[in-house]
Length: 115
Image (tube, rainbow, N blue to C red; front, side, top):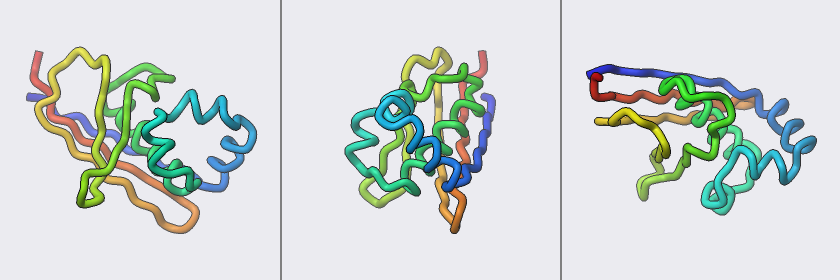
């Protein structure tokens, strides 16, 4: 088995500028319809974006694979991720998203089957 970890930190103010500049194209490129249906709050989207970036880093996915990752909440509020098109078997995963003032951050951990 192999443990893979990724983390990301997003400045919410800079993220808001990206949202304002990119508009619907930015949203459609980075977020699934289900993610956008759950919330359009800037802080929430920044946290989801940080989670996706953390997962991209942990799983060594190529840039721009944001739509291959979907972040949702379990009934208890804990974030969870669904990863599409990943060739290795994911045995277990964990995801944490946190917000504090001007920043959103996320840490993703995966347990993968060894090749």
